[in-house]
Amino acid sequence: EEWKDRGAAVGVQRDIDANGNTITRVVKKGVKDFSFGRTLGEGSYSTVLAATDRTTLKEYAIKVLDKRHIIKEKKVKYVNIEKNTLNRLGEHPGVVRLYYTFQDERSLYFVLDLAAGGELLGFLKRMTTFDEECTRYYSAQILDTIEYMHSKGVIHRDLKPENVLLDDQMRVKITDFGTAKILDPPKKPPQNGDGPSGMPYHGDPMEEDGSKANSFVGTAEYVSPELLTDKAACKASDLWAFGCIVFQLLSGRPPFKAVNEYQTFQKIVGLEYEFPKGFPPVARDLVERLLVLDPAKRLNIEHIKNHEFFDGIEWGRTLWKIKAPRLK
Ligand code: ADE
Image (cartoon, rainbow, N blue to C red):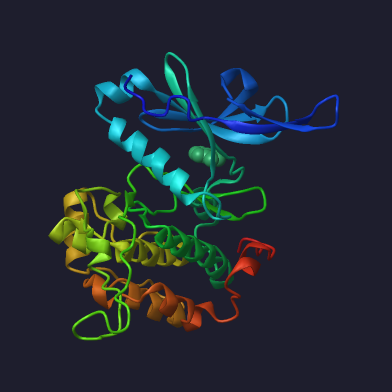
């Protein structure tokens, strides 16, 4: 069997029997347990449908992948990456959660959090640009989610406004982990006195657990220069994309855009971009410290959180409880 996930889709159901004892049953969900609704999105290998659990009436987004097409196009690896990454990430308000997976003769099914608002890009296009307050709100949630993904050893590698979804309360849910990189479990930092030098341990951004995530992935406009020059992505590559997103929310367009991919890449490696007139100076300073060619010299997450642009943001749980600002 081509698909490793057979038998993996289980839920736990607890019932009280006639004697008042709790019985726990492992129940496998399947296609029949959901009623399918409207199409939420279509990719080259998958369709995302709104669906409702017939028992609980909870709504989900179900990604339906065509097995024959995936095999024919040699994309099995990416489907497994997506599933393994989502399983590793587990529960965080900013990540689309994977609840169940199952399959039938024709298709694979990923039962995901429904992000009823759809893509952040859709809202940006309707508004043309976001003001500073809206940009701060959405980018703070994106950054908190990147920090969580990185803490779990996941580099997204394809962050862009299409992959940032919004739920019914306008909270960020990052999706599309098909091109993510799972890093090896982090090595223990050297203990005091067990190394020859006794040097304190500082994570080297290029030496992510020995993993320079290989091969070419991502979307042209958000691809980091190190991926183009060294064919290697690291955690800081997600922060380059984050800088591109902050620029785009405030100006309505990504910083590096040309008529074709090749010319876009030329602009990226040459750091050829310009701020439009009226771009807020504090945000400009942040973007300039993120769009830095050397990934080791890019601001790290802690420094970004402390940047003046995010003054007034309370990091942590509260970030996910505040009311979304009205789009302006
Ligand atoms: N489009 C793709 N994935 C989605 C999701 N989880 N919720 C809503 N729309 C989507």
